[in-house]
Length: 108
Length: 233
Image (cartoon, rainbow over all chains, first blue to last red; front, side, top):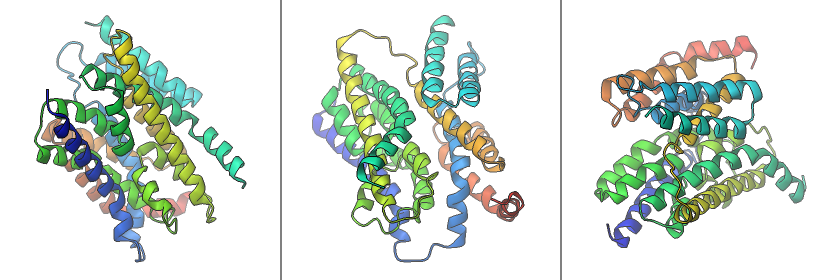
C-alpha cells in the first residue's frame, strides 16, 4: 500500500493539471479578440470529441477473443436506441448499465 | 429571473446529469473503496479533481504507485479534451469576474453540454451557470461519497458498473447527433479515433486522435461553414 502523502500529492497533481487544461483557453484569450479559427474549432470540436470519448470508453474491448465485444455492442446499441426513442438520460444510462452488467456475467 | 426561479430552472435542467453523476460517482466510489480508499478520499478527489474518467483512471495509477511524472502525463492526455471545452466557452463565460474561477474548475463534459445549449446573453446568465456547475459538482461528490460508503457496507459485485460512463457519453453523442443536420464532425470523431486506436493502441491513441480530428476539421472548414449557411443555422 502506498503512503497517504503519495496519494495526496498524486491528487494535487491530477487536480492541478486538470484545472490548467480547463483554464488555459480563458487565460490565453482573456483580453484579446478570439480568432475566427478558434471560434470555428469551439463550435465543431464538441461533436467530434464526444465520438472520441465513446471510442475511448470501448478501447479495452477485444473483438477477437470471447465474447468478441458482444456485451459492449449490445449494451451501446441498447443505450442509443433507448435514447433516440425516449430521450430520457436516466432511463438510457441505468438500463444500459444493468443490461451490460447482466451480459458480462451471462457470457462468462 | 429571480434567484428562486433560477434555482428551479437549474435543478430541472440538471436532473439528467444528477442521474448520470450519481451512478458514475457511485461507481467511482465503490471502485475506490474496493481498492482500499474510503469516503474521505472519494470526497477529496471529487471536490478537487472533478473529472470523471480521470478519477477512474487514477485508481490503478495511484494504487499501483505510478511516478508523479507519469501521473501528470496521463492526466494531460486523458483530460486534454477540456482544452476544447474551454475554447468553446470563451464567449459565454466572458465577464463572469470571480465566478469564472469556479466555472473553469467545474467545466466537465456534462456541465459543458448543458451550458452550451443555453442562449441567454444577459449578464445574469453567469449566476445561472454557476448554479448549474455547483449542482452538478454536488451530485458528483454525493454520488462518489455514497459509493465509497456503500462499497464498504454491503458485498456488491460492482463489475461492469463503469459502463455507466460509456452509456453517459453515448447519450450525449446521440443528443448532439439529433440536435444538428451536420453529422460530419461526429463521424470524423468516431472514424479518426477508431483508426488511431488501431494504429497506436489503446494506451496511446487519444492524443493522435485529437490531432487528427483537429487537422481534418481544419481541412474541411470551408465545407462546414458553407453547409452552415445552407442550413440557415
